Image 1: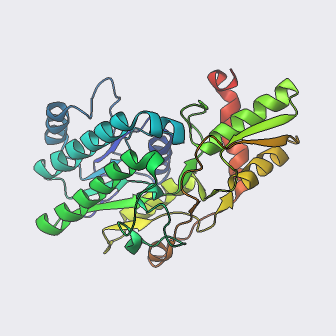
Image 2: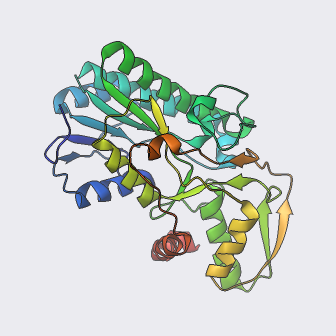
Image 3: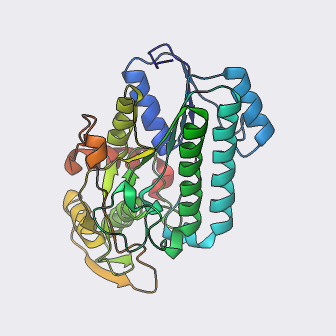
Length: 314
């Protein structure tokens, strides 16, 4: 059946940064029957619990935003957890949805699925054409497995299980733990603390030359809601802004926004990760979707939320 405003939508991972943004957009767009469960009430790594829940609820659409995520350091240190937990969640949700008769599922992935030295901008067809970046290969492998599961289940069982690959996302409810987070929230926290403490320097992990594409999480959520109404031919789509900048550029941008100037030092003992990550979003744009790119406004919203949460300020 086609998804309408009264269709049952199970949003897995609704408390996370991405899931909470999608929840806000679903509500804003008039979707009235959104099903959510906290991690305490439903352990998605538990097959029996997940299968039973899906069989009972029988949603018309599942949006899989639940995942174990983190930056380079966390990905490098906890490869076993990133691989096991993400594959377990995906297996349980994807296969459980199929068993429950669910016809529509959206898996949210990551641009890290592409090879380390991928041709730029990265097209969907470049998947599995080269070696992955070592620092987060466990997470990448898990996401590729989920993407391929959706592709094969759709093809074999004639159902609509699709995947969407965003770049680095940021916004409200992000993780600002500098040992666990992605580079952008880590930079926001470091520069904020340096300004408050009167520091003159900023330490950046890596060389600062690696280039990254960033997308505001609410804009990504807009895209997901947009594609609910579309019949997608491809197994997966890149969703981004189609532009990338260096880590150094982002640091200078944040300093400008916070009206401070710091001398940047580089910890080159830390890895850069992929040298460049910029998505080709041509296929997504063919459906009539277009990205937004207002760094100034989205930074303001992000920083306001950062300041509201006291644990970010420690």
